[in-house]
Length: 291
Image (cartoon, rainbow, N blue to C red; front, side, top):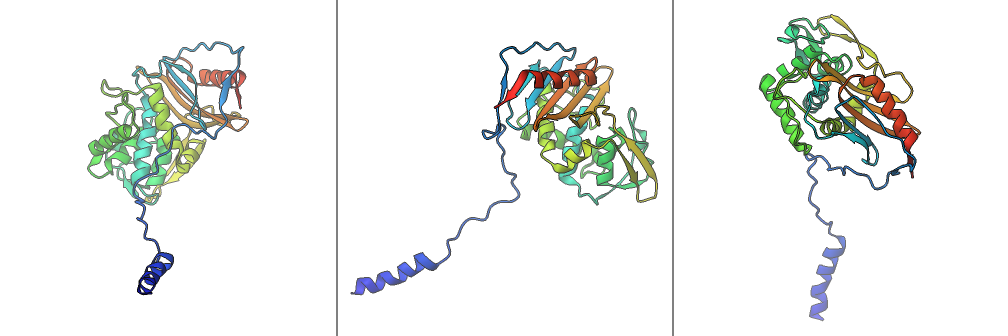
């Protein structure tokens, strides 16, 4: 009888006391699989045609499944030009809040493509990122970096740290805008992986699909910006980023879709990036079916 009385409290404890579970660490992002087993898989047709391109490096993937649809020298190190700004935006989106106020410090000295930021002007971080991705402003890139803790150098270090977090071994950044440097390179595969990580963020995807925007600084200055991506507005094309320098050649990352099948195209050192992107788009949907 004594044993029964002793067991009753234990029984009540097990049945009615709440089970204590460890609190999940929200600071750690969920790890997503590169490939999705639930997505329809693209299948190449038996009578598929060949694809001839001038670009040195090309990588094309089905965005939902991660299946490679086409590649050409995907791991060859090449200069990314302003495709660099995809990573610049990733670091900026991670650190700045939309209403963070950034000051133009030395960005007005930037060469190449700019949005003509004025020295001492103050803008919201969200607007500077618009100038970075829509108009490919080198001055917008520098402004994001110069307002970062530790300044420009720390920002570039964070870009390279994020590259390693993504598991990419053939990319290195020495600046935030894509200025030519021997120590600044990527591959068609790597830049596609960086773009895919960026497209996981609705803010990024929304920005790169815009053709134009009007920015108003806290000092009252107006900046009208327009996209450098002439494919925007054409059926099936939704972004992402352009790039060009004399050494890098024509560069482009494209998000495209047809019949609910999104694909990601990266092109490095092309003689006709927009024409070849459209050529790849047609070739993919002429030569693949999704099952």
